[in-house]
Image 1: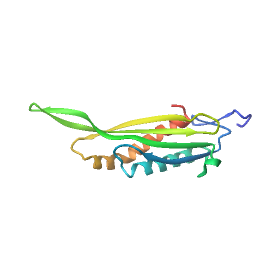
Image 2: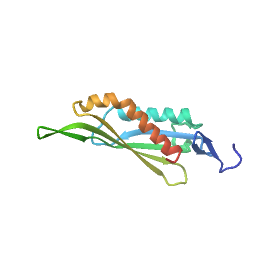
Image 3: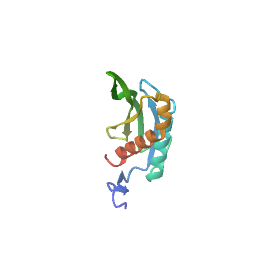
Image 4: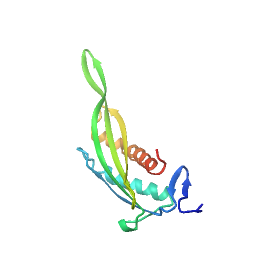
Length: 157
């Protein structure tokens, strides 16, 4: 489908200009107040796998060889109260929420960087510790955030 220099490559609603052939995906840094040491490496790895497996792009580790450079940072990762119950006139937390926000920047030569922000919330029982909730929710969090980041980068969602 290469008929000109401005033709778009399209596969499963993925749009990549035909001039883009390589991508460098940098480590997604965690700049949130609370840092889960497993989160950033898992998110970075999953995003790399998804981009390589679901696009025609080749991965490179060199900035000068990359048509696109993807940077990212976790800007928020915190627990909040989502639900409260009242028993015998006393309020008690019943549901907690893990809030996660990731900012992604796509850079390419001679263009302004494009920023995408993805936020998700994950509810869990207040009787559960944050650490046990994270262990239970980690796969779902990584999968959902990776899908949303991918869609933002390649589908314009």
